[in-house]
Image 1 (cartoon, rainbow, N blue to C red):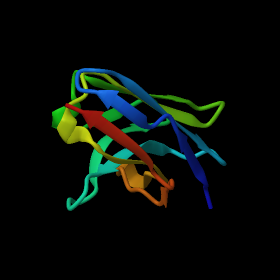
Image 2 (tube, rainbow, N blue to C red; image 1 turned 120 degrees about the vertical axis):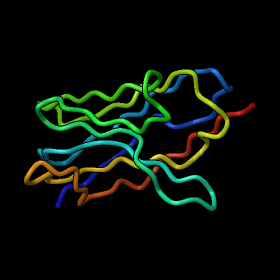
Image 3 (cartoon, rainbow, N blue to C red; image 1 turned 180 degrees about the vertical axis):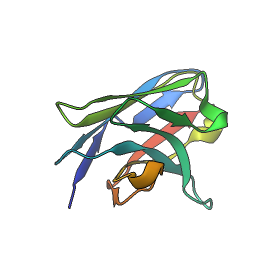
Image 4 (cartoon, one colour; image 1 turned 90 degrees about the vertical axis):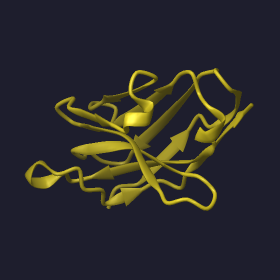
Length: 117
């Protein structure tokens, strides 16, 4: 079992930046971020493998950057040019990523990101 602890959520104005961080209790192949806005399904934001391979949602490409530190077992999400519609609870996620998949097995408790217009 891998436990995930997020930090860095908060309130920011539209066009601003915010950085989310997540620490894992153990080493794991895939780490990343999902988000869930009120009344909507949880959706992928960005994920990264231990080898550095990344996958982003089309809506955040060029504005968000995911990174990880395999030694410290942390993953971070730098979010720039934030939009009001990106207000959501952001969840840290991790998974085994077997056979080249991006499968997720573990979730953090979530951190609120509010973007004011």
